[in-house]
Length: 337
Ligand code: ADP
Image (cartoon, rainbow, N blue to C red; front, side, top):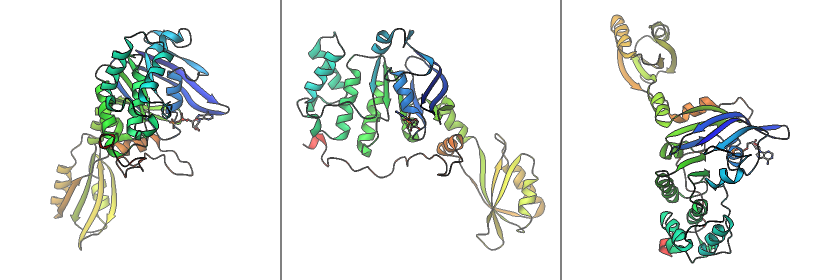
């Protein structure tokens, strides 16, 4: 459905996207994940033909974007990070305007009514866009992206600035839309990608650092062998003795939380169950294991490992995933009004 080969975009001396390639099959929901400034919007803007690349090719549904821009773009619906809305129009006026702009040929009223139903804005159809909450404006943005009945939806940070309830609603809406379409969605929020996408392409400093199924990433996060261990043993012997156990990768002294005990963090080779060897080693020496707790590596840890950059501002960080709601422009929901 989408083939990207050797795509590069430079802004002056800054290379925002550096020689990236990927393919997306019909029906996939793919997340573009990366910290701010990674190159997500630049890539999306190139995919939609909004800006051109310096080098590389993009083919949409078999049409090269440069050679056949009309045929390629017809298959795409795009929701930029800031939805292109006219605040002084009603939803009805705006969607009719977009319908004309895109030269749609469907039965107008029925088609627009269908889309409004899909994104659940029928009840605000005659309202001015400026009087809608951010969540509802985002739905109107999705409606405009759907007007030409595209097979591919490209959504740039679709939940930025929404409150937690709106975020859940928009994510559910995207999942429903993904049942019949190919969706590419960018986000700097890992939980969003996890909640919505089957596949994740992680991008950092213009490069693709990972392209994997979301569940495979989650599985690799779960498959580590890290444990927090508290053992009643002589303080100076624990680290050297544990370090010598075959399959042990790393032993870190954490401290002494209870008298006569030592706390360490151990990490063993993947797929090695180090616990038995640990037990035997301790039993041999008359040491008692008081605590052994698996310590998971979160997907966020994996992400940070992939995108960590030794710059002065510290590693690239994801935004807190659930966090506090951002200030909403309205306190009422549309249903309450
Ligand atoms: P993301 O969407 O991942 O936050 P962007 O694609 O917006 O990242 O930006 C990638 C890099 O390109 C950033 O360093 C950004 O400052 C730079 N950049 C983006 N747009 C422009 C532009 N129009 N002119 C100059 N630099 C830009």
